[in-house]
Image (tube, rainbow, N blue to C red; front, side, top):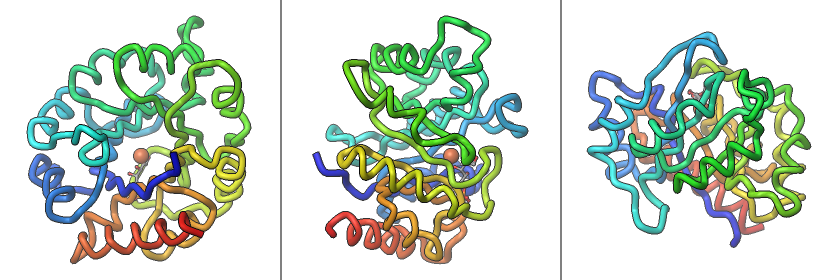
Length: 240
Ligand SMILES: O=C(CO)[C@@H](O)[C@H](O)COP(=O)(O)O
Ligand SMILES: [Fe+2]
């Protein structure tokens, strides 16, 4: 199936004092598709955010549509031991569990490989994403996407060093997006970090279709206008 434009605001830039309503409004009122939920453990990245109990709370006010087009909880797991949190996040309402390739290959648990993690994620009924940091080459995910192994449903190409919102978009990551799009025309390719009206052209032209935007959406005077413009740019590039 041809990829669709998916706008996934990062809730890291929302008002955590009103988290449930922020999450529900960004979808229902401002027209976003998914929620990008950044999970940081203070080990894989030098910052901590939220855990499964908070995800459970927001799940109470945001439903996922049956066709997975709206309200998908896209959990970006910036954690050193991705295998450790699978059941907790499934129970909390995670739909797409996106682990970092770098964490999986250096995990303390020798039984955990990226392909085993993908199998375990699928066995729990979640979709699987694999994220790569700016310095990790795109070709590390090729063996996961080729051949007979269980494949990831999405690849996340980080456009900042993971750990903090509000950083500057790194255009040097765009050739990785372009290489992935050329090789995998139907793959969901997500970009994350510094995306907004000034950088969306580069990401969309390279072939990204899942756009994470935290500051650009939650910090906007008219979040709905920003969501609409991001979507318009991605749709224009996808239809070329
Ligand atoms: O994963 C991360 C940061 O580690 C991101 O999801 C950011 O939180 C996106 O925020 P903006 O750069 O869009 O403000
Ligand atoms: Fe993220």
